Structure formats: structure tokens, C-alpha cells
Image 1: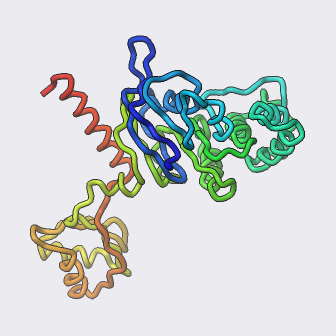
Image 2 (image 1 turned 90 degrees about the horizontal axis):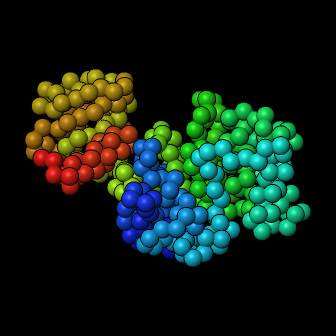
Image 3 (image 1 turned 90 degrees about the vertical axis):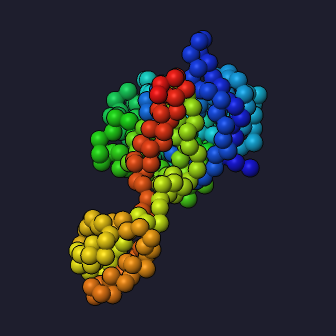
Length: 316
């Protein structure tokens, strides 16, 4: 059973179609929900939590989001994008209240509040009112309240928004450790591609309310890999190998002293790399089909989507 299953999920706000017939089976440890601002990511999360009505079908952990939202929220933690903190109380009171709302008895909710705040790095600040927290601390306390009831999945909506580089790195480190330390899967909604490259193993890409890709990061990056386009790693002197390959008709770009990008000539195979390496006296340590970066793959998917939109609209 997949973590999330979508069957023609559609969400309308009056005449505006925010989500248009989403169809997918989504699984993974850390899933990056990607798309430009306004793509429909936050709306999708709210549908999956049963917070807003929608058309079509959606299941989370096998539960029907349209009929059993409360059951889903018992098993899913949610860190919203926008500030949603109760002012005038401290972090322990906030997280305890969140635990009680999820059905925990008061004593257990209090114990878990302390544990969640410790994990989020707020142990020393837990009795301070959340009103005075910095942006980074507010993001951490939102993460703590999402964890307090020990969820099976965490929905994190733009968790690094507004953070300075050190705070952003700290948050990503926390997120990357969650599957092993807390035993939960994560859906990370973001428009920041480096965050996805840093922590995610799967990706879902949305564009203008439609779902354009769902699969592993390797599938996303490797979709355009071709056998004639190689990434080569050597022990020493990538430049020497590049010179030998260019003499044989290849095009090369030396990307570091020990790596190079190679476009083989027509009809050539990777055997040409090894032959040229032997001729140049260079040891090959690794060779693989060159793949897109996550950013390049994302731009390709969004570009393909924009082209589809243009064709649908009658553009040449």
C-alpha cells in the first residue's frame, strides 16, 4: 500500500480549478513535493488531511481523506507554511495542547511535548513564550508540535522558509534524520530545489494545479540520460584523458582535476573511454551515463508542462 494514493483529485474555488484531476501512487522515505508558488502544493496537503472538501479520491495510509480526515490527522503530523502559533503561551504548553488535540491524555501529551522540543533543539527555550521566538525557533516549534503525537507521516509545508543559511542547514539536518530516528515518512513541500536534492529520495512535481511527475529522484534525474553522454571519474589528470578523447572525436569538459563530462562521437561506446585512458596512462575510477541535476530535471518537466499548456491553448 502506497503512503498516498490520488484518483482524479480535483479542487475548485468557485470558477478557479486549483487541482485538476491528480492521479498518482506516491511512496518513499522523504518525498519532495515540488512546484512554483501557486502550483497547488499547500492545497493538496490540506485535501489529504481532510481539511477542505474536494472531488475525486484520495487515500493516506489507506484511509479515505474525504471521509476519515480525523483518522488521518491522528496518524499524520502537519507543519503549516504560515505561522500558526498560539500567542501568550510557551512552547511546552503549545506542544502539550497539540498532543491533547490529537487525543493524548494530558500527562502523556506533556511528556511527549518535552521529548519533541528536545529533538527540535528547543529544550533550553521551551519555557519562553513563543511570541518572542526568532523565525528559526518558530519553525522548530512548529516541527515539534507536528511530531508530538508520534505520527507515521509528516507533512512539512515550506519548513525552511525565511531561515538564514545556518538555520536552514540545521532544519534540513533534522528532517534528514527523522525517518531513522522517529520512524516516519516525510512529505516535504517546497519550491527550493537544493532542499530536495539535499534530503529527498522521491519527488512529486506540480505545475498550475496539475501533477507532472511522480517517482524517485534517480528516475527524475535519469530521464534524459543517454549512453553517448558520460560522466567519468579518474584517479589523476582528467585533462590528459580529455585530450586523448578529443583526438578520437569526442567532446569533453573537464569539471575538476579528476572528473570530466564526455560526449562520445557517433557509433562510439564507453569502450572508447577505456582505450583512450590506456593510451594516456590514466586510471578510470568510475563511469556512468550523465544525468540531469535535480534543478535541470525540474526545469525540463516544468518546460514540458508549459509547452503542453501552450498547445492546449492553441499556440503553435
